Length: 290
Image 1 (cartoon, rainbow, N blue to C red):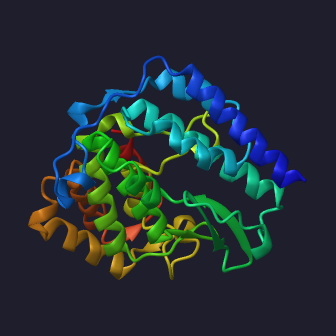
Image 2 (cartoon, helix red, strand yellow):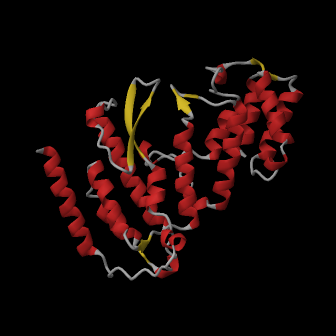
Image 3 (cartoon, helix red, strand yellow):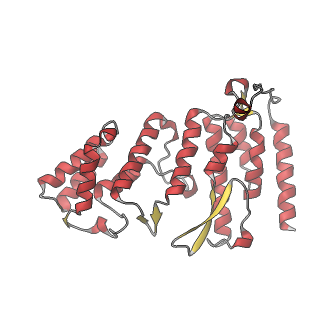
């Protein structure tokens, strides 16, 4: 009965949304070959109003409704702000569904929706409903800005990397460096998609940025095999030093906006005979603050 109620509610919501659209859908022109049929020219589309998306999505309460809402974009170009509003809606409903199931979603509770997936976390002890950003990017392919498409690809890459477990990064320092460089390149090119955490930003709307990961990297913190490294003083780990050196020697990294910061921290450690202490840690914080 609950599922039937949700389905009826979702259909009623979509019917109301269709009535609220300000303009009729324009005809979309495509060429008569398979390649161009897959990618509709955005110039032939009218942009959907981000405010309409934001206001309409407020009434969505379930993953089923959020998934069905995707059809609201049919035939429209989706501006960046409209995309962000919809992604926030998807995150909110995924978080609420997971919380409702006490952070353990058994197989028979998996909604099996295209834009969502259930994945294990904390060593498989719990399961959460997560947004499938890859599926969303594919569904909206040809109707997003370059930045919007790149943002979804970045979010999909975050999900594939499984960076964290029990609060510790599950990648090596060298892998973390590569991720930071990739994120820095994206954020430099598309700064409008950076979302910094603050008291008004709930967890489900938080996007990890290169700067957040850089703090872990420069402090040699919380990486696999180094639990609690952020609380220690004493000799710097050899793999931390080696990663800094590899970062600085990599020609492809020289254009990274954080290159000089890595070089500065390397200099601090070198001047302190490759040991951490309170003074060096304060110096690293000063580099990050600058």
